[in-house]
Image (cartoon, rainbow, N blue to C red; front, top):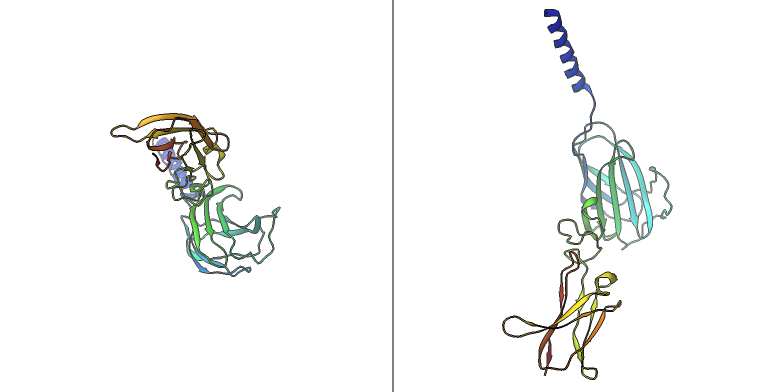
Amino acid sequence: MRRTRYALMLAAAAVVCLAVAAPGYAAGETFKVLKVNTTGCNSGTFGMTVERANLDGGTYTLRTVARAGRKIYMNENASISVNGESGWSLFDNFSYGAVPNPGTWPIPQNTQLRLDFTLERPMGTILWSWTTVFHGCNTGTILYNGQTSADKDKDLVPIPTDKCPKLKATTANGCPARSLTIGYDGAGHRFIGWLYAKGFPTLFGRRVVTIWKLRPGADKLVARVRTTQRGNYAVARARVAGRYYAVSGAVGAVPKEVSLTLRLR
């Protein structure tokens, strides 16, 4: 009985030793850009301070891809293993592999520069991704600095600030800006106007627009019309003095649009 118990104790100890000795990946490895140290568009002149955290001491692949315009200027395969802050510079380096559209250094000035970093182990298996976008290699002004997944539409507005994460827009909330007008064509006895969102035809083509008349209490619905494919609308109504405005309803996360008020005398 004692031998059996002793054997079980040895087996349990061996399992514990194996569990401790077995290598494993760290939880939540990260690589982030903290700041720009030097600017410049030649190889080796643009430098940053980066932070590496939660690495387990093993070797990781850190891929750096630098894009400007439609060209790729860097596709580097670097090995990292140590945590902490360090310098990181851009070089004419394609050690990760050839690309179909390589750029010729220097990187053009005043051209948006996008850096994508992926922490991988093994090579090709992404554990973490980080994106930093600059106004240009000569300015170093940061336009976006965060996890790649937080800017799915690449409009430089991160989630959760981006209320339209699938629509690329340059507005503060990440949703395309729309405009809606209202007027009155006296000769045609009709309300006319235009709904528009540059670059987003689905937000203005074939959309319902309602015309409302301001009055004490609840405003009065005067007409309902659908825009053309180009966003124009027209609806016949007799001219009646008053103040009117048009409304186009929300489209997903894009909020409703309300026109300025039109006064008819």
